[in-house]
Length: 514
Image (tube, rainbow, N blue to C red; front, side, top):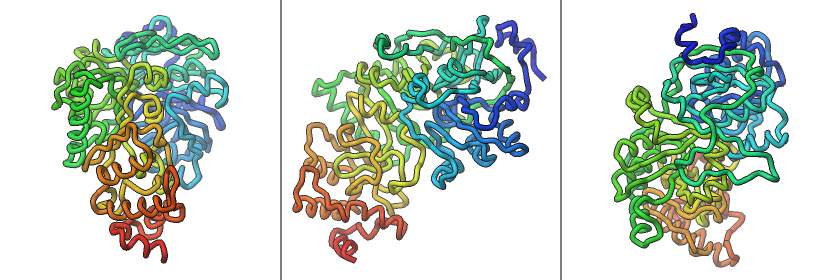
């Protein structure tokens, strides 16, 4: 049953009450072969009831769609849609294990995109047209405009471009979200004026998505929560990574290259990035700002500590414990937060203008500083490049962090040659592991290799990396390689499940010869 008093407080658009439908009725508007844009960015602000109803509908009458989102969906929606064989194509990011398996089996075609680019491609008709947009809303204004919930992502452009709009009005979302969003849509090229974001706290747009409300085909009333993030407490290794970065930033301040307020910070998602950001609270910094994608637990830890003045992002994703603290008192944070479309939070021009310090996570890096963020052994997709490329290419400081070992030491995160390259050596300034920080600025490839091996690689694998590099240098070249050996470490993982035969340099030659 719909609480009409609460509904009217959240849907102030008079015709809205006549458009209330069940999730099943709304899902029936989505037909086989359609392209659907759904809200949601990193388990935050996704439409929840309609995708679930769509999966149930497909069990009775098979259909498949192209699904576009902002980033990953919560509440196991990608899993349910994959199991129901609803997804024929998916973009631009995901984190679900079931969907990942379908992608790697070739059953779902996945387009891994820079997160700043998806709606730009849509706007210029390079990805077809959006048939239906499904957007979670905290409110609908008197004008019929949509107030998003905990993420903006690509929701604004999907709603503006779609033929039909389904609004999931989530009555359990905090009312304090209204007024927190900054919706700005760049004009068309080639006469587009500069986007006037000049600081993390710039507000340049509206607080709701401006749409023609005649395209709203259904309003589904829900009261479901976002999935909590799965961020884990910092362990000894992530704590050491944070300490290395704090030491680096402190030295940059002492040298005069940075001030105690640093520059606007961006951090990727997950336990490691969250731990690094939380660690900044212990450093000698003040009046920090963030210009990032996802505002995680660490954002609110820094706000509460008094170290962080303002944070701009495109979604808020919190652990259960942090959410219990933040959501009931969201009002107290409102003046220090803004949520934008992801084409603004990740916009390369803004990233370069603000001089962002970008901190992202690598799956692996090679001795010359090339970084793989996406593919295991060069072929199997994990999640996607996300926004890391938007920031790495354009940041003032591009930092990648990773533990030096994976799979209990069976795999080295630092290898002779990355098996897939998302971020070339030209876009990587700093590499950090629990063992140390490699400052690669101003170094030629041969110099980079020495620093990466001796600073970041685990001691178990340093002899083999040294041996590889010495052999490669004997052959010459600006970026020396032994091509027949370059991916032998990954081949060993494919064949034996580990890289342990490369722990000792004297065994590497024997392994290759054999």
